[in-house]
Image (cartoon, rainbow over all chains, first blue to last red; front, side, top):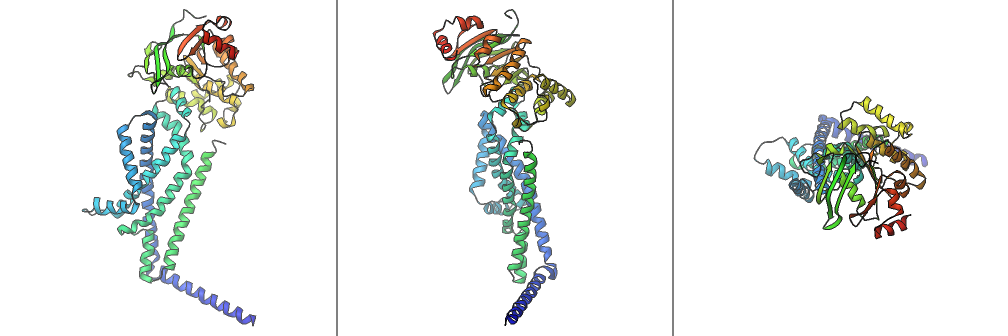
Length: 245
Length: 247
């Protein structure tokens, strides 16, 4: 009696496993469909990498402008422009920004979609990074600033040598988080028909009429990327933390 | 005494207002080379504001400050150059927490005076040795006691070879048992001829080391005198009240 139950379970498992293998072959091996995922992953990584660069660069510049304004009252006009930028970027969805850049701003020219995505996500991320960095700068004790200035450092030197190193250490977790968000946000690149990782999974789904396999695969790849990235950020954090026990 | 020595800091009609509330109401003062001037006064009297104006951490609302003959309140003056010759020590030390003690002492000479790393390190170690902290060269500020931090902060300023040292309540944030070690270094500096302007509540220090004691209240100099006269024979009514509370 128990033997029969056991046998059926085993057979079920066996057919289940067989079924899994068949679907795996259908979705990824046949017609080299895994190449969609590989190309999509590369696209996602390229877009994320350059968007992070733009976002970080833009974010730091804006943060320095804004905190300079609140500390010294200088750079009033630049500060005003930065405020507008942050308000607009944070006040509208990233998909809408992506669509506007692709179909409105570059609507009449034939332009590389990767470039558009990098630009859109970079510009978007910049606004968030700016606020993170600014909070880090403002959180550094005013006495640090005075100590730097009283030694004879000018404003820029004080910022670079004394304030920013401390600010970066404090904001690293938030910054890491922002870049994880950015990586996942690039999954809306499909809106401009850019074949990123998410779009790749969706293309396979369209070919094989199997949603489970490609979408779970895509999810797993994002998850692994985020885990790797988190580990890297944690390691960097630990290294920086060594300096204040 | 140094009454004939050259004037190193000259303050003319100094006013400072925060949102139309005046913290300094016209101060005229001269600090001479080698002089140790102690400034006392009740809290909110403007004494710290006065001290912080001397290196323009507070920008005066009105009046002029001459440092070594140069009007540093003039917008055209490069204040950074002059600040390199004015050391400042703060109540809360303000050491750079992301650098070792040694780096705290080396960064300004290297970046501002163009000294080589070896040169800066040699000088830093000498200074640390002088305040008995050479063995803490590789420690980070967070690993030090308050008294050690303040001693480091003093030599960080000295590493720039300043012509004058400004002390803004250097012992007020210290545990009582650590006040002595910081005052000892300041006394030694004074005896060696460093020009010092010290805002403090340590009347003992004023009596022992000061060439001149200044009483500031309500944003003006109410009275000043040699320490002996200042404490034994105060004239100003407010100073009498103040001394009766602190002595």
